Image 1 (cartoon, rainbow, N blue to C red):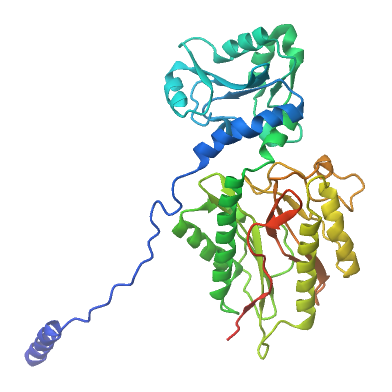
Image 2 (cartoon, rainbow, N blue to C red; image 1 turned 90 degrees about the vertical axis):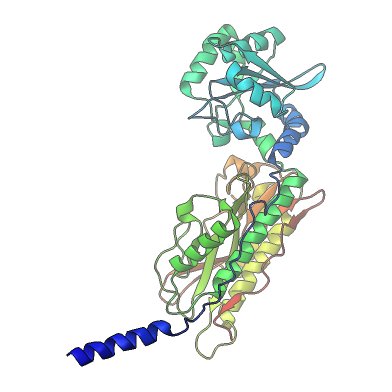
Length: 444
């Protein structure tokens, strides 16, 4: 026993004296904090207020617009007017008079200095502690004699529906007999938010390219028969964290990776990706906490012995791609959203596609489903009012080229070639290069 213990100890000493293997450190990709550069929103916001809001007031047929901002339960338009840091209630007033366009804020004294330093508004008037900013704004409105005062109450546009019930009651009481001059800001907010400045479109191009590139990378990591839809979603979430971008819509459904039958707007499941699957990924990222993208990329998982997608799948892909191209060709200033949808629906019918319940497209920009014309309604007896709205230069859309078919098991599958575009003077153009070919998973 003593000899064995001695031998064991000697072996331990010999092992401890062996040179250790050095592991080369793995090079880690570091995304610098200023990867995206300075946030352009402060200057763009100022430009939007001074260049786009006057036309929005005119097009909506209102003299003035009153927005009330406060902490904890703020108006959804607050970030657009500079009221995102409001603590006590502040009144933001935008109006036209004989001398031109003006922006005036009645701010509690505690926040007035910081707001004034942002240099967004023509004037920030301090409201002493204990006095009401809203009462000050109403007194000014009455003095100016405006015929219409738009406030954020809307039945159809959540971005124009930020005033609370109690705020409205207080405002109406302060207005007295002039409360009849209060009108909905629905059309005003629509006219203002639906148009994007060229600088904003450039940011959205970056967001669109990131979403597209990440999806291509995600398809490259798939191991058929092992990788799940949820694994692909996790990969995309990791890419977002690496690049410091956030979700374009609710995190639980971004991205939606779907290698099985159609699921509509949903979350990625633990369904295993198998040879023969057509994979849809619906994905978007948000840059600077303001602008979003909404892009879909499609892939086919090769079966043993295949080097290309089968002829029927390839044909469905080409049909969907053609739908995207014809929808883009239909986009131009003065065209109704319904007309864009009709152009694609007619092609779908000609190509034998099954009916698809989703609109051809929707506005995108500050949120995935933004303010603007709906590209839908061509096959609906009573299309929503947004489908009757006219396209204008500077509007941005996410839109699909559809083809839907019935699979062998009786379920339906839809190819929806979703791209992004901006309306120009004479037509529309893609924000980034569209997907031309099916991505083939498993190709050597």
